[in-house]
Length: 160
Image (cartoon, rainbow, N blue to C red):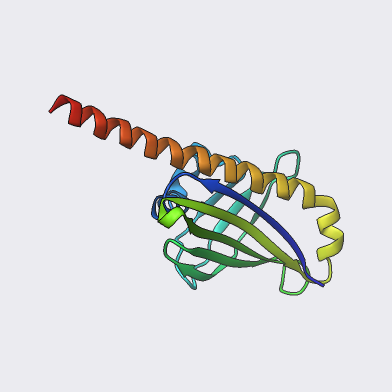
């Protein structure tokens, strides 16, 4: 039986700008309180993901990127020890809103495997809190960058 965690947030920036920040793994320590990622977001690549859920235990795993559609979706599949025990398919989806001026960012994970239900009883709340913290960090980061660029453009126009 599969178990799903889903979160979403609306970001006042186009999907292209959200994507730039989402896949810039090297800068995660600057804004992302939940996870660190090493690797490249290319289909077939293996990532190293280090999770720090609020109030939970830190963990590290090496999922494989199963789908990468620029500006739209990044998906990976990870396993605890070996497939079938506790598997997680993680998804980041970007949906354009208001003609592409804004973005709905969705972060979700489908957990399956023999121990999925049991382990989620212990880590589900912390994992959801981590998703929410990351979503809020992403929103703050992207909207801050876009606002700074608008101010800079206005100042340079005013100076000209």
